[in-house]
Amino acid sequence: MAVVWLAVSGLGSAALLAAGLTRTQVPPGVVMTIAGAMGLAITFVAMMIKQAEAAILGLAAVGSGAVLAVGLLPDSASDILVGAGMLGLVVTAGFAVLLASGGGGRADGDANIVTLLHRIHEQSMLSDSARRVLYRERELELLRRTIEDDLSRGDFNAALVLCDDMERLFGYTVEAEQARERVLNQRNAVLSEEIQQQVLAVHQLVHEQRWKRAEVAARRLHRLYPDSPQLEELERGVQAALQEHKRALHDQLQTARAAGEVQQAMDLLRQLDEYLQPQEAEAIRDEAQEVIARHREWLSGLFREAVSSHDWAGAINCGERIIECYPMDTMATEVREMMDRLQARARGSAKSGQGVAGSE
Image (cartoon, rainbow, N blue to C red; front, side, top):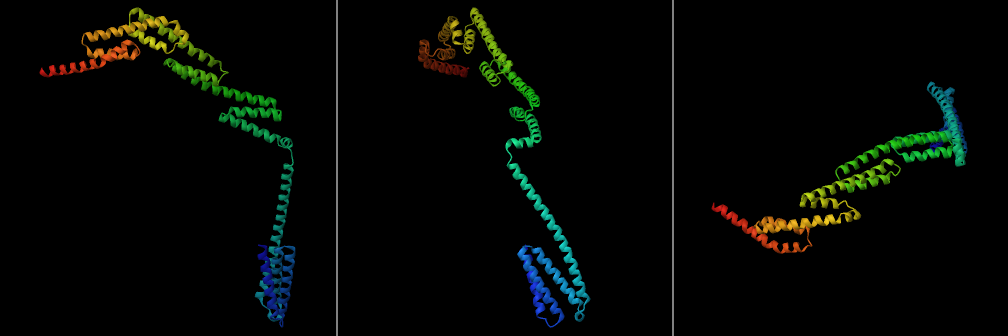
């Protein structure tokens, strides 16, 4: 932009000079020649001091003065030229004032920028400890706000770390302890609610007799929250409920044995076997073998009775149960050898039954 201003000033001055030289025989030409020379001189000086504003203002001043001088000459007197010259001088003066004030503002602005840069340099030369002392209150306030933000988000671990920083870095032991207590109380309240919900879920599993899942869930909770005495009681409670359930199954098993309910006793033994530890199973081994032997003989008797009475469907059903319950027993091998004949006789019996029904 400065180059444009200097070019305008130089071209304007050259134009005045050329116009004056072509009319050197008349007074206006002399005035224009002087004005052009002065404009070129001002432009040259402005270029040397790198002030384009001085060049344009100088051209405006000498140009306006030349127009005014030409208007005042007796041979070329003109009210228009006089008015134009006066207006040009007034406008030039106004621009000079504006540029002067703007230049001062820029100077002030430059001074402010320099001051700011000095401050930045000074701050960068300070050590971390010096900056902490200088901005102590500001950092403390930021620390307090951050603790509150962490509390509102439920980020309790981060809040506890900031409480330690408040005590360690700034020495605010009392305030840090108060903040730490608030964080711990809020965390414990939230954790207590979460633990209570999961404890209720474990109790529901116990109620549904889903013992394996209940044991796993209780151990997991105790592992996640080892400091909670409530969870120690929960794990022991699951074990106690399981032991009580095993005792109840064993009592029912003994009752079914005494009553001769062979199938019911076998079903109870299967249920009990799912929960017994090796040492517990060893303790009732004789009792279990008796139940199994009775159940085997009972199924064998049902099978023989069904075959003897030509109840082929009942025989097949008993045979399948024998194969399922005692697949490695010799009785199961004998039944397998008979299954094809039994099924053929069952089909033949069904056809003969349909024939009798049709004849009727």
